[in-house]
Image 1 (tube, helix red, strand yellow):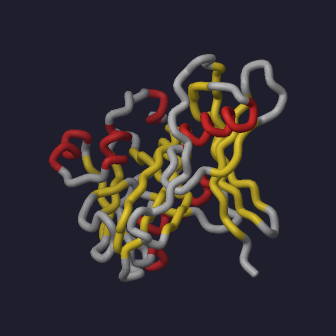
Image 2 (cartoon, rainbow, N blue to C red; image 1 turned 45 degrees about the vertical axis):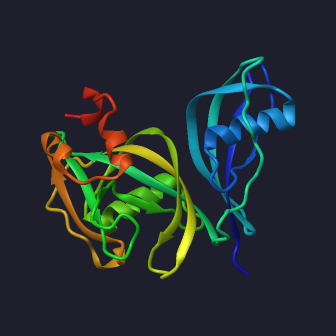
Length: 242
């Protein structure tokens, strides 16, 4: 019998001693889930300040991908509508946790992968990475995917943040529409000794190509929204480790 998977969020209120949190619902933003759990469990309105950590908690029965937030009390803040809703079209749903990297070399070139035909977003340039395997920590999964998709050896520099994306009606290799919800940990990664990228045999069919690009080339590419987000972040000289 295979272990089940779960995505959770946890945070600690100022002056508190216990972490508060729980599962992220399908389609729910991790930050919204964090606010909801504080309202439901502590009757306290909070705002999410930053992401502190992302890690997997693994037992024989459960693989839990946990996002840990720094929060602050915000008495009287609007908390929104937390009603759980099912897919209005009755589509099957799926939820997965993934790790992706904004990968650069010492000259600040950016490494991207192209989504293969038959997968949602086919033809777009995307960040290297993908879903985590059972028992795998997010950073470990990203470095594994980096080798499989691009044949590059990378070093994790920092955790950039956590995003999510709901893609209703996505048609992938299953051949039928699925209402997918992905929660994604995003890291800054350095490849200190870059080589010519290539998709290795172990990568499977989701990656068609991989390539290095200069920053000036990025605006002309057909890229995913998460590439646009990562490329817009401030550059830090210390990240390049020259």
